[in-house]
Image (cartoon, rainbow, N blue to C red):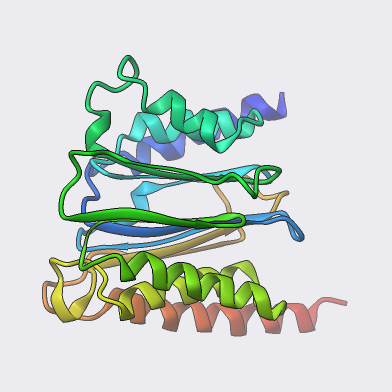
Length: 251
């Protein structure tokens, strides 16, 4: 019954996130933390609503559906993760030509608890510009229409640096990785602005699908306007202060 309620809520949020359909020119970091069992995603794009690429299954894993952003694939991916599927099983399913005849235009990243050593990604041959991915233990970074490979390699390096120091939370590591990707060039179409929208999501294992522990979203900024990753950092730092105050007031 609990699983059925979760799927019903997933259907509602998927409908909300289904518009617009495209989130081309995107880089994202999908990751899990086996110690806290948190799962999370951070991403940025030169489009107005990169937040729509994210699919989160609390206590299980995460998926991003970018490039041409097949929203059905994202919904199926979350459902499979909730059922305990491996990242590769998810990728195999949603890149089957019988499922999506345009699979070569898609890009996916999937990471799951229990499969930390086997994150999975797919970059279609027909996606545009520089595209590719880099992976580590419990993390996958992927992007398309980027300035070059340094965007994903720098993001991965920043994430893993936070992991090695043993003190950075999953949210801290995701935020640092997103910033490193921007500093290394970001979206090739946005120039000095790096992107036009950005987000970060982290869910605890007991969170509802529609109510993750952390969910910050910077929607589309004006062309040549503010850097959304910088705006996201300000919101994230404010959120951290608020969280610290809440912990201090808890008996």
